[in-house]
Amino acid sequence: MAETKHWTGSDKYLCDPDLAQAFHMARTLGMPLLIEGEPGTGKTELPIHYAKDRGLDLEVYPVGSKSNVEQFVARFDHVKYLRDSQIEILNAQREEKGLESRLSTGNRNPESLADYVVKGPAAIAYSKPNSVLLIDEIDKAPREFPNDLLYALSHRKFIMPESGEIIEVSEEDMPAIVITSNREQELPTAFKGRCIYHYIHFPEKDVMSQIVEKHHPGLDEKVVKVALDVFYHLRRLGLERSPTTREILNWLKYMSDIAPKEATEKIQGLEGVGALIKTQADMERVNRMIGAGDNLGTYLN
Image (cartoon, rainbow, N blue to C red; front, side):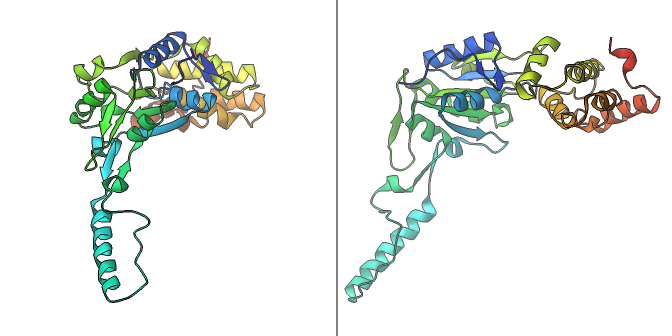
């Protein structure tokens, strides 16, 4: 039976109570958890840290503009099947000529179509009930991709191509499935109806401080405070792309090997700001502030 114990996070992952509740509900009901929110809020970190903390197998499918169900579930290797079929014919001809040596098909048998089915992350996860499946950034996929998943999500089964093999799990044995979306496009209503939904709001400063502590324990408190003050001020500027959780963690990682007093000065002077700012227009705007002698000190209280 799949793991359904209520999980509230780990030493490296701070799980919001509402998110933990939604994740527990999804696993208990045998439904996928759909997590939406702006980039960099840790949507993908939930299944990764959950699998690591529980010692479970993790299958990951990073969605792209050309994603399709065949890649996600399974595909039939026609090239290998035709090659092996030709090898069998050649072996029969060699046997007729009295030749003992045989060409190898790698222990595959053309009469067994299942030997040529290459399973994708979905089929693998469905074959292992006590596992975790991450479908990352589904909003990048063509619109037919989430629609094509409706049958599998509703009936909890996949039918393997050519061989007709059925991989099916019960509600109780459904793997933990987490689907993330940055809302680049709206997902079909019918698809959302098959999921438990949760939206991750951007963390407030006190919660972000706890997240930083998880990732960088022992970091000087003043360094963290000044970095967070600068970080949240930048987020209030209305930039094209506001800095995210991932980016403040990277910035502090860069500063962690520097003496606290020097690190504080570098942070106030926005040294290494490329860890936070990700567009030319935003960088020019921040550089104008720095060029004007503004080290953000007047904004930090």
